[in-house]
Amino acid sequence: MEDNYKDERVVHYPPISLFEWMLTLLVLTIPVLNLIMLVIWAFGTGQNPTRVNFARAVLLWMLIGFILGILFFSTIIGTLSQFSDMVSV
Image (cartoon, rainbow, N blue to C red; front, side, top):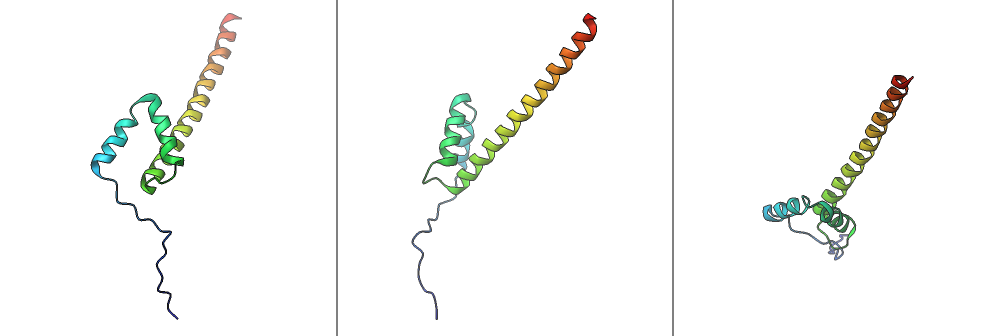
């Protein structure tokens, strides 16, 4: 028995063009707009899956960078605070 049916739920998205990628990267250079657009692209409905995955990857890298930045600066502040305690004694 053959299954000759067409799944109508599958939506084929066209590839993202060079101009669309250039526009996407331009939007990501604008400080507050980049976060807003990344959230819309990552979690909005009806988006191209390539752009969804790209937006989620960028958001994940931003989160990793934010966490590493907090760890780095808290380590620096802790070290400087211990150093200032040793100098003032």
